[in-house]
Image (cartoon, rainbow, N blue to C red; front, top):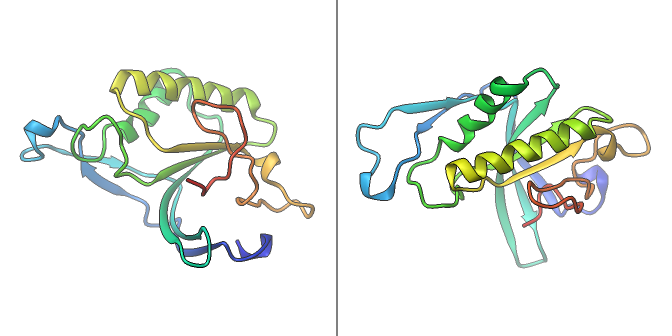
Length: 169
C-alpha cells in the first residue's frame, strides 16, 4: 500500500488462508442471540488497514475480500451473497458490525459488476439492511506496471456509480 503514495494506509493484518468465520445469524434485537445457530462465511481474504485521515486522526478498518471470477449465477450467486446478510448479531437496520466487503471482479467485467450491484440492492431490500460494500474491476485498479493498486479511487458502492476509494469512510 505504501508503494502507491504517502503512507496514509498501513496494512496491519492480511490473511488468505484462515478465512472461515462463524458468526451468529442476524436476529431482531428483542430476541437476543441465545440459541441462534452460527452461520459460516468464507471470504477469499481478510485484512485490517490503519487509515490516517490526518496527523491526529487514525482508525482501523477491517475488510473481507471477495474475488469474483464470474462462476456463480442466479440462485447460487444470491445464496452466496445472502450469507453475508445473515451474519452479525442483532437486526438493527445497518450491518455496521461486519467488516467492509470488497468485491473485485475480473478485468473488463463491467456487466458482472453491475449485476452484483443490482443483486446487492435487492438483498438490501429483502433483509432491510445495508452492508458496507465496495466493488471494483481489476483493470481499473491497475497501475502503470500492471499491478493492482487498491488505493485508486476506482471502487463503487452499491447505490452509486461514482468512483470512491476502497478504504475511505
